[in-house]
Image (tube, rainbow, N blue to C red; front, side, top):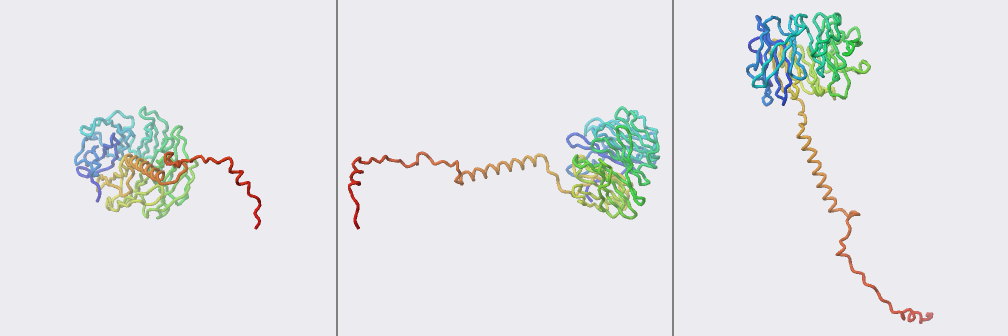
Length: 384
């Protein structure tokens, strides 16, 4: 099995990447030990695709409550952990050799368990979706309330912000899905047939295709549906996996979707072709995958399950071009073009290949005797 796992000392409940400068990313993991709960931060080693054997920083949730999910701010300086009692906010500081994080005062610490917590892509908003169906949207970091809707859903299942942070999609355990305008909170309900349940949702992130991807369960059939976010009409759907998905994620560059199944498989889908690019079977053997997230800079996935803990796995997808490789290719093309031009110039009889003046033959002046015309004209007609 590729990658490394962290499952000792407690049951892993959730995990998330923390984006750091120079790709020195971290992973924050929420654990329950039965008697207490912990938040632990591990460093990520790119060369070996593993997490550090021991945490770089630890915080005990002394107020009680098991971790439910974690949302990290795009800056990597803050994160919010939802627990079974409410949400806790933490600030991260230091560097890899001396990582520390401290809890901050937060107005959501007693709102109860939130199934979904998410920051907007631009980091200006924070959204929470409760198990009780209560939807809250705040400005960050002022925590000014934008939307407070107690009956947004029966119970939240999933949510995601659009790339421009103007919309938020949310799904419910009863199969409904809504789109929220993050400026005024006006919702739009996605249409569906009576036998369809919209379960998971992710917006496209490549900056060119304004789509919303959702998983749809239609009886025993699992589909991926694509919606146009300008009209909120379904463009089409495709059946790529034969089993229900428990979680969905999209890479930061928008090139890949990932689906985690309820029996431990991970499917990686190339968005451009809408085809399975990589399949990692039995990654969390026989167990529901509870967390699935792409690394901010590598083709690596972070996954968690209650049985197998947290795991980082290198994905079997085509390698991306590095910046220096692109520049090297451009330089090579330029040099090749210069050589071909020189060869063509030297071997072609171009209009511009003027003859060397020093090799031009000399033209001598011909002097004709003035009487020569008279000599020629003295002959008369010739009788044959």
